[in-house]
Structures are given as C-alpha cells and as structure tokens.
Image (cartoon, rainbow, N blue to C red; front, side, top):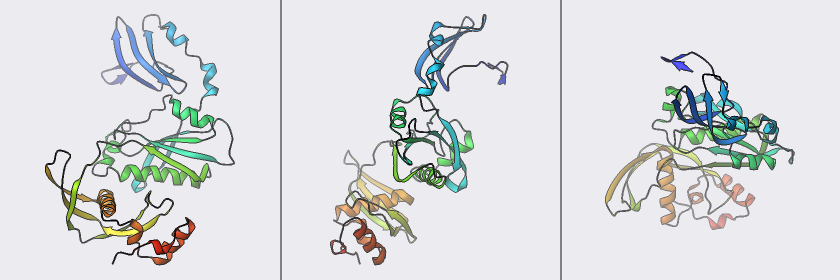
Length: 290
C-alpha cells in the first residue's frame, strides 16, 4: 500500500503478478495469478482485512504439484547480470534433463513467474524450462531496459545463449538436448527483388547454420555492413542500411536466391570436411565461391 510513493503498508498476497487494479469503497480489486493458479479476480477489504471467497478457493496444498519458478542470475551481454526463471523437472526421467529456453516477445515485455501450462507440461515430462528476461526486459529498471537499444536480435540472442552455456557449465542440463523458443519482436522483414548496392569494408566471421544442411555449423566471413534496395509488400521502392546480425541474415538469405549455401563460403576446408562427414554429407556437394 503506497502513498506519495512511500510504502505505508505491505499487503501479503499469494500472487506473483497482478493487473487491472482498481479501488472502490476501501476495497482493492485486482486480477492476480501465481505459479500455481491462472489469473483470477480477487478482492481485498481494507476495513476488516478480509478477503473475498475467491481467495479462499486458491489452495496452497497443491503447490507441490507444480514446478516453481526460481530466480537465476547469469552473466549476459558484456558480462552484465541478467535475470531468468528456472523451472526444474518435477520427475527425474533422464540422467540429465533436456533444456527448453523461452524468450518472450515484445521485445520489452518480461516473464513474471506466473503459471504457464506449457511450462508445467514440459517439467512434468522431466524437462528443465528457463524463461529469459534478457537485457531490454521490463521490470528491472531503465538501465536494464535500455540495454536492448540498437541491439535487437543481437543482445537478446546472446543472453539466451549465455544462459544455456551457464546451465551446462553448472551441470544442470544435458548439453546435447537444448531448444530455444521465442516469438518475433515485430512484423517480418519483407524484401522483394532485393539488391545489395554497397558492402562495408569491415569483414566479420560468425557461426552460421541452415535448415538446408541440418546439423552443420561453421564460421563464415562476410561484410559486417551492407546497403540494399528492394520493394516492399506494396511494391514501393525502399532502401535499407543493415549491420551486425541483420546484415549477415540478409546476405545469407539472398545467397539462397542465387543457389548458394553458406557452406559454399566456408574458407577452412578442414573444418568444412569434418562437419560434413559428421552429419552424413560429402564435400563434393559443396561448390566453393571464389
């Protein structure tokens, strides 16, 4: 209970997230949820400190039937402390549990530890689930929120990967069974008849993979910045300057238009041959780009 931004009274509520707050006749009405219940309507009476019948219907006896969120901090982008929720498996069905990492959309939303049936399903099957509040997520202050500025698709991806590596390092999960799931931060980028008009002078090496050659991951050298022209979904001419991961993704996808795969651009023949053989491919299927 706050007055003039000062805490007057702390009200103990069995919720980790509340919304749609309203006050009427000394009564507080909210929608609340917790790790063991979905959103419910809840009323608190300030006069007699009583709760509505609805609150009494929330049973804490069932807590053990749910995987509970545990805050886990790790070193993310630029070694900055980054938050996540970890849900441990309810049953040990594997020597080491597989890991599912969930990244929220928004991109500035956040995970709050509220009950999620998908999370509970996977933990009931012996999986560990992690919800990443990567840099840029709300609820951790302005500095944390502004980490994502000009780094969409870079910082958030890095934080997800950093969490995976940390959990593997701590021997919490199976390093061979990891999946990262997430939603787009916005609408898809539509490029019709794209043409790169200029390449930057700085080259960058970064690991790439492709569904056309599943399981193969190798470093590819590409220009770190590009300029291109294209038409949008309405046929209007557009121009775009891209750098970092976006520039790499555009070049990767445009190669497909010309029948080129990323393995055709790998400069280390030794690494290429090793990866191809490991995944059942043959080096003769690769056409090097001069």
